[in-house]
Image (tube, one colour):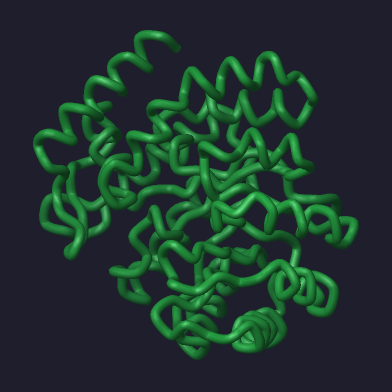
Length: 295
């Protein structure tokens, strides 16, 4: 198997107005993504509100995505938490329903040492016997996994196949790219930094904005990977305002609001996330209307 490449969409989890999982809308999102040529799907990540879903709900979301996908594209399921034991349970669940690769976020709140990162990931991957994409997002977890720890895991733990890097630290990301093992993929965890990361030797992205514009964003990534920087830059800047608008409030509030405006999901979030503030909603609406008109 070669490196993981291209665009993976960090799928939102649609909820009904009563707060339960909206299965028809989730199935519709999977079809929308595959039809628009993303390379892989990532349910139950941060964008999927996994932190406020029960174990049973997370398993069910993964089951729905696996079923609807029907082996058309790879599915990488988010199973990480700040508890190693809980992450083991969730990873076993994902494996039981047909997932062979998982996304493991760095433990949040606990603030582990670098050795803590290493032992946490090593135990989950080895005990569950799954391939894993590590996920470094210090803006959410309050702890940064250093390049040396990422490289140690990539070199010493079998089945560590990639990292989703959302540290916003390009020097750190380039350090990983420079010294990584041959088949270890470096994926952007920030839509707006995807182009510079790919031009530095990165392999793709796990994306938020591809929920809204899967064809255009994945076209940008494919162009960048193919070395067509003229096309990649054109698409990058065409989508840049929407990438930024997706973070004017906590993710996934804006992207779910946008998908609601597009008629794809209910405007339903799990507390402590709430509906978008009116003034930010208007900003998002203007950006979304402009983007759709220009696509």
